[in-house]
Length: 157
Image 1 (cartoon, rainbow, N blue to C red):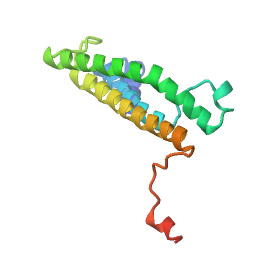
Image 2 (image 1 turned 45 degrees about the vertical axis):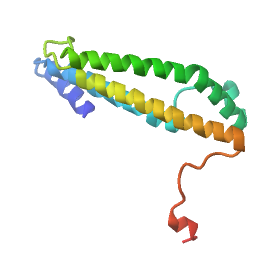
Image 3 (image 1 turned 180 degrees about the vertical axis):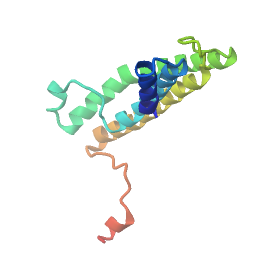
Image 4 (image 1 turned 90 degrees about the horizontal axis):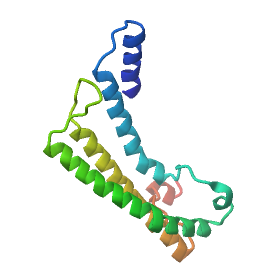
């Protein structure tokens, strides 16, 4: 959808010289929603950018130890701050019927702010799940199997 909106705006602006007021803000809303909701998915598959000079050469338990300390001292304080601030930001947007003033279209800010708050909440929950997996790995010295084995594979079918 985001690609369609941006393509529409580019064609209208440069081919027909008739830019729209709404296309820019819709692309901002869609792009922001896409990125914020992708945070927890990216975190689940450990696809966020990290410096691997040391981390990549460590055994799984060493990686889990670094992840646990990183979660406790960096991730959880930061995500807690962001989630609390996004809650007040969202509440204010809905309470005051705030509008987005980027263009003259003035769409309501509440829906986007709600998506940002929910995305940060989901990101925090995924962080808790990953933290539990890392602590399990540190204690048991084996990875936590989060995926149940399908019945077909259990029976060797």
